Image (cartoon, rainbow, N blue to C red; front, side, top):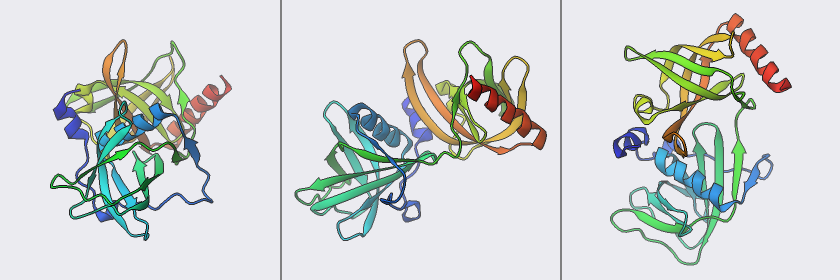
Length: 250
């Protein structure tokens, strides 16, 4: 993906209104401990520019976002809001990822960090993260060898993307970098044709909730496009429910 495409998808600097609450002990969350998964999650946040709420030892918070991730060096750089510093003690980092999940981790600082003019602080990757999956529906993988795709018109062009998973509430698409260049989080796609098999087409409106670059061995650079179904008729809903039920039986 080109630098321009990545910048196009990255959100602006975080604001206080972007702050999210911490995951509480009473919430059913799971632990992420694999260093590769942790590095990948933080790299995704760096690419998207997701806001990070940084809770300080005195329960005050400042806003930040992840700038870069060095998975091999086991560290990342955090871009803090203007004039923010990190005091010594236990710091909690919380972020909402793509509208689908919340991630939280703690880092103990032996001494205070006062960022320079670039407002960048270098920190170690956490050894464990708490992840709260907020999807209302389980996503089902598209069957191997079956025809599953999404087709819609964007800027007078017909766009078709493979559909790699779906649920009653949303779908996951795979886009090329050029196709993703036309999208952004919050973009509404009207009148999308979702082909869910050889004889089933569902018509619905979609709202883009996630854009995540990734690389495949055969296709090279691709972009994961997570979408929420925002408008669907009762008849189309029944067709979608039947497709989900068939996939669940498989």
